[in-house]
Image 1 (cartoon, rainbow, N blue to C red):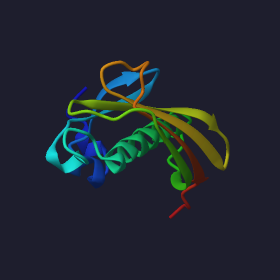
Image 2: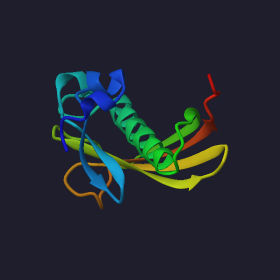
Image 3: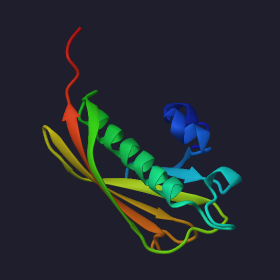
Image 4: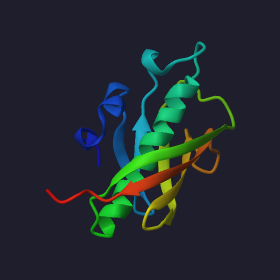
Length: 136
C-alpha cells in the first residue's frame, strides 16, 4: 500500500508519513522515527504524535465521505489528545475511526501505536464541521 504519500498533505510528507496499510476500511498512516520528529533524545515529540493522529483522522473522514459519494470539505472544530506512553525511536502508526458522520458534523477517534495496536501511545478525539462544496 506504500507509495500513496502523494495523497497526503504537505505536512505529512514533510514528516515522511505514508499510507502503509488499512484497518477496518480506514488508512493506516506510518511515520518513521527521524531527527525531525524527535523531542527529547530517543523519543517522539508530542507535536509529531499529535500531527500523526490528525493526519489519520483526516484520512479516515475523507474515506468515509467518499464512500457516501461526497466530496465535502472539512474544518476542524476541536482536538483532544491523550498521551499514554512515550513514543520511542521506531516506526509509529495511526488509524482514525469515524464514530459519527452526520450531515454537518463528524466525530473521529484516532489511535497511535508502535509495536502493538492494542497498546496505544496516544489517542486523539476530533470533531469536524462538514462543509458541502458549492457548485461552480
